[in-house]
Image (cartoon, rainbow, N blue to C red; front, side, top):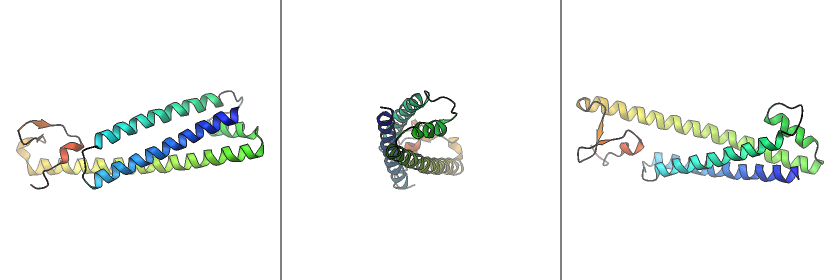
Length: 160
């Protein structure tokens, strides 16, 4: 019973991590190709998947809380698996390790992407401050309306 529940949660978490990685790739491609049309939608989807992932982590932690004398997620997991037959133990630990490795890879990739986006935003803001000091760092539409300083503001009609 515990094995099946833990396996199910870990596999669902692995699937969500793969979906997060796919969305990060879409966001990276959108940034590199300057395709801002679905940019906000990608970030909204990413937020929803991260919320699902957090809920699954909560389920997994609840599953581990019944194990006495352990501290921390890893300790609880390995204490749980130590009580299982070798085949089930091997299967769960393999899923868990690959999940942790993929999660770390996705996290590092996401942090690098967000750092790049922050640098692009700062560079564009600096450019506009220097190029158009009379606008006080504000960006306007062709109709003279102020535009927010999010990534959609970086579309420049392909020419100055």
